[in-house]
Length: 463
Image (cartoon, rainbow, N blue to C red; front, side, top):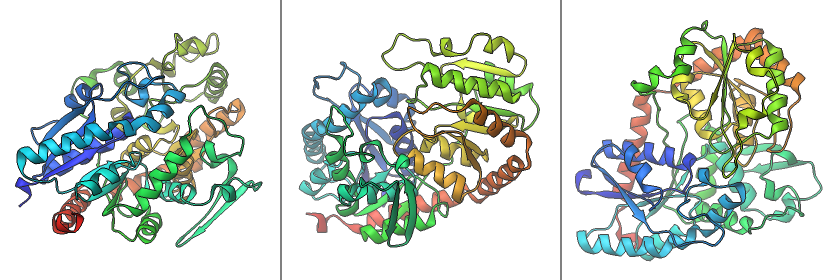
């Protein structure tokens, strides 16, 4: 039945969103569905190289030139923070190209797609789906806890959230969470928050439509990992919620020959802390120096990947304290640029992951059974850190906030605790236990159940 069906998938243009969308597309392809994977013309070539198999077709849409955005830079990992905000609020300019493509493909095939799975961050796709009578499924590329808290925050009156309270008490349906003001998305922390772009109304629309105008919700998480928050999403939307995340495994091949893997091969088991802050978090000179001093003082083996800020002419390795690399050469490895993160996390020498708590990195840490030392910086990362530290119990925190400068003393004592104290051993045991509870068979069952649900909807009720 599924062989003759096709599905449309449309992620927001960011590396952190492409990864789970592509993983989901491959799972659908394994179920016999054909996937039309939509993105912009500039993003298409890179995605094409990652979309293995003929069942996934990358469809490029022309993104109109937006004043303020560099030409052909149509993914947030190629943009500054403010430019990324502009891309977000301008994504509706893809509406007409998207609808033109839908009309063309339906005319050519005489069939509608069985559904449109679109990013929560592309709220305007709800209107397009309704216009063509196609069910829309909202995809949260965050976890369920973050999706629940962000949905609550962006669909309730802002004036209540940005009151003078330093602790925001969230009591709604089955969730009860106290958030510190510092854990709120930046645009909700103060009435005086300034951004050159009016991001807040678009986020409110995104989460509002994700709550109200969808046939179902898919969340990038595993069954059982965030059960109470999945239940909250189900109760607040009145529609089924599917937990579908992939067990991403390191690919054997040329990456195994990289210098960082060879270096890890020389280290003792569970002896190395891996330090990386994702594709879009870039540390300032003061932040880098403070972190480096704490890592050096801990006397623990480490591997640290350092990336340069977008659009700058800066080598971020120059931010390291003078003499740092020489002083730590016998027990540390600094990599400038990309590293095979999945291979590093799955390596027997890796004991802990120091991270910004982005959700893709968090899931990779969970599936590798590696506990975390967190420095959440923005948006969903605060909720992810909460989940890992307070609910799953395999994390510590050194700092929070994009502009914060960590205390070198806290970095030192936290790294020592993680690597040498009993608390670190306990967290490694918890992380391994959670890893063992997640299996490929369960993930495949979730995909099959979702496909059956979508196939059973029928299109008539959406006309």
